[in-house]
Length: 306
Image (tube, rainbow, N blue to C red; front, top):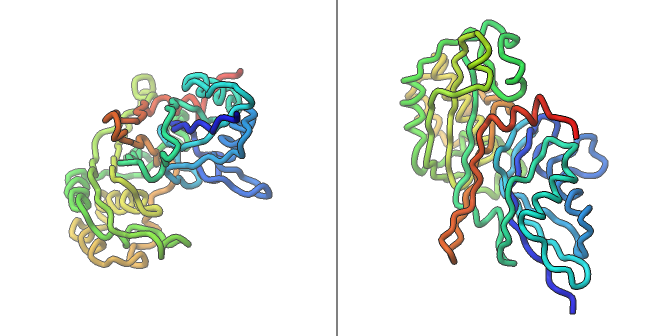
């Protein structure tokens, strides 16, 4: 008798610079998405069923992830038992080795588990550096991994005060970019965390230049399209003195995407999806994958052969 497919929750990371985003693109598109490569790797395991990877959290072109997640069904041929979790991780990574994509963990889950709808929180970190005379002053290891702010001294206290205004439940319409999904997405979100703190860089211990690195961390169950990049751009503008703290409240109250100032959205390359959390209500286990930002430096800049 043919056995049913086994469903797995997989966690994966990627350097997003070369991809159109995480979502799959059509075959005639010149630039592929991360999902294209994930599905290709699963197909190489020769499952009986049609392969479909269901991504939990969408990221745009140039955005990175240290922890994204997805579920996938794999039905093996004949009487072969389901793949063990670590065997699945190892097999997928073998087929992904040419790409800056890595599977970090896999969990066997119930057949009705959904990676997107069962997530209880998502965390993003936006990295930027200030006080640079020119972007070429950034260490090469930070290329495409950090927003370089030229000739900028930031008012950190004002940025922290403004970030606090974003906490809680609000209509974030002003902080979302318009897309085809806009009419179907509820703009009311609850922001659990909006925190600015000093950041780190692999090069700081070895590169003799005093560059202040900063990290903005945002946590919510879900986010609107480009919400994090708009919030980051607004907070940086406050630090630069181009916006006032009170204007953050005014932008929230406007509840209008078109009210967001032009050219204020932070660029994609400083943004990282760092955590997607789940709670298994049956066992009260928490699924997640917290990984250091350092691990992506190797993938993006100094990947080893083989």
